[in-house]
Length: 237
Image 1 (cartoon, rainbow, N blue to C red):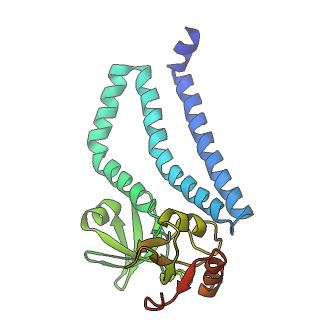
Image 2 (cartoon, one colour; image 1 turned 60 degrees about the vertical axis):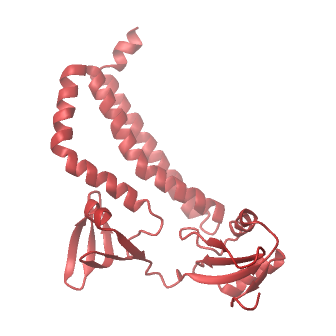
């Protein structure tokens, strides 16, 4: 019983805060270690991408857990306090959640080109409640909620991140081809390859992005080694 009473206290809330903060720090350290030790490993890049997204969603989940701990100390008084904060802070909370969804998009990054209603420029900085976009009229602050409501398109500014097309001919199913592609370290996993069925059952259309320094010939050689026929033109297969 003493343990329960201690947990539902200011001291227990402090320990909860320390635990949540420590877990956040551990996730960030793991991401940094993997990034520094295995930049060319596609499996690790996939894991890093998952960790980054989990970090985006971890913060609001941690806040909810902390708020529940705060309310548990005094259900009535603290519930009223949080209700008042929620009412007045609703626009900011909504904008923050929109930002989490926006930033978790794999093609959204600082330096990418964004186009939306009355907005056309380069993302200079991603922040908690909005972003700074460099337009022809100067720097502009944009709320994430406004971008979400109006819709947007993103184009990468990286010279190595050009979306390319390759035509494949193989008896393998789509999942089998994708499994092979995920074993290839020259593909940029942050802009996932897409595979569509061609006119025939054996034909597939691959759209992909290469890592910096990689070439299409490297990809063709890799696929040919897996007995997958390739062509740069549709008619050839």
